[in-house]
Amino acid sequence: MNTKTPENTVDLSVADGVTELEARVRSRLSGQVRDFRLLVGDKGVTLRGRTRTYYAKQLAQHAVMEAMVLPIVANEIEVS
Image (cartoon, rainbow, N blue to C red; front, side, top):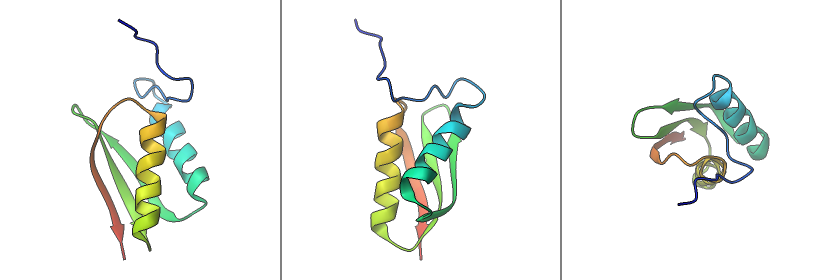
């Protein structure tokens, strides 16, 4: 069994892992999602924040999916 993780993934078990991933996603989105946060739970990650477009919400989700192996439980980024 291969337990190797991709090079671009973030280890959320370390203290700065969530902060690093949030910063990475913010940088990639160029401010399209305001107040972006990740909530890590037992079953996976929940995305939170606010944006003006569904496209930006989807971009945030894909950026997180590329950077970690935990599943996304919910994308609660509010579009308004």
